[in-house]
Each structure stands twice: as structure tokens, then as C-alpha cells.
Image (cartoon, rainbow, N blue to C red):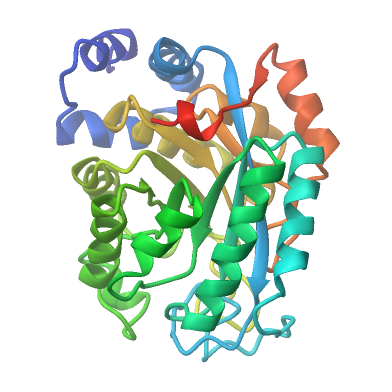
Length: 330
């Protein structure tokens, strides 16, 4: 039996957990799960107290994507009947920020499908961001795909605080998920935004037929990238995608994954992201013991939990919503 208390103490002393300990977290017996959660909570509490960061997504461009990502309903190979539309106009993006503000979200995430933004699309986003930063005291995160030279600097100048580009899976499993871009393409974009002075956000999707070894490698890769914010998605398999019908996850395993990411990336924002509702189900509140951030509202092409329910969940836990301005970001 692993001594979970000692593992948390090791992490708080600044030591890295080894592979044997990492496997032990993912293979924790369910009758020890509460002890594991308590130990990961000690790490989370040390760095973040009982505060919870809220993020909201706006899907500014849907479908029409030339990439072949096997999990995505917007990919070129998907037959899922999702809405397809080109980049929203500036005013619609700004209106979305108002909704994010009403949902008490501290971060507004502007997301667009596609390999990367065109000049026109980038100009639309940056113009909207400039107005949002004037009107609302919130962080802005952009997720627009692979960036061309100079585009990260344009986003930074407009006021974008954070850029999301997920590694999604381990390097060795990447080719099983998509072949239209490489793992290194994703890493290069994360490094590009870091060089431009934008806070890097990069995460994963768990449940895509990967091995436990892959999950551990994902967490370690994000530590090596020094991602400030780590969204942990749990696959919500959508009909019409390559991963249609995949259902490997249980609520207890999802909790163990969150604990692992907290132990390996103790100082970072760990966000429970897509698939939270369908995979954690009734155990959603327990996820906030290792994680310190969630999305509110809907995701890209799937519905999320109603915003007031998330607020109530946080309140019922005795936690509090954190409001963080751009100047206070890590």
C-alpha cells in the first residue's frame, strides 16, 4: 500500500514522483481513493487554497477543419452533424465576453477550428480582444491552432493573456489520433507563444485508447513545457468521429488522473475540462480536490452543466470562486 500522505509531502518538498509512484496513483484501489484525494488536496491547498478558477469558451468558428483529429466532431473526416460556420464577427465575440462576465468567469476563451488563423481571422480576434480588455476585468485566452511567425506577437500586443494549444496525448500515441500534423508542431506552437510573452496553456484528452504509460508521459511532457494552465479533458466520444463508441473511463479513474496531474505539476492550474459531466458524473465535486479550475457553460460542440449548478457545487464544497486579473497571472 502506498503511503499517500508521504507522497504529498514529497511533492511539497519539491521532489518529483517516480514512475512507480505515478503508476500507483493511476492504479490506486478504490477503497484508498479518499486518502489519495485528500493527499492531492494538500498539494492543491498549499498553492491555491480553496479557490476555483472559472473559464468560459466561445466557439468562434465551427467545423470546416482540414485536420483529421480522431476525437473531434469538427474534423474533415467527421460525419457528426455539427454546426458549421466561419469566423464570428467582432461584435459577437465581444458579446460573448459579457456572458462570460455574467457567469463569473475569470477567463474568456476564444476558440476557432482550423489548422491556424488567416490574417483576416486574426485581425477580427485581436480587434475584439482590445475592446474586451477595455470593458471587462478578465483574462483572455485564445485557441486558434498552429500559429505563423509574427501571429503570437500580434495576439500579445492586442492584450491576449494566454494561448491554448493542447498536446492532447503522448508523443508515442499521437500518430494514432491524428496524422495531419505532428506532435512537434504542437510543442513548437506552445514554445512560440511563450517566446512572445504569452502565458502557455496546454493540456490533454484522456480516454483515447492510450495506456497508463501515455498518461504519465503526458503529465511529464506538460511539466517539461512549463505550461501555466493544464486542461484535462476526458473523452466524450461523439458519433461520427474515429473514436465513436469509445467508453474506457470510469469516474474513479478520472479522479486518479487528476491526482496524478496535481502531483506531477503541483504549482500549475489544473482544469477539469471537456467530458467532465459525462465521465465524472455524480463525482464531479470530488474533482475539485486535486483540480482548481473548471469550464462553465458549453464546450465546443457539446453541452456543459448549467452555470448556476457549477456555482452551487463550488459553494456546497465550501470553496470560493477566484477572480484573477491579467496583472495577477502566473
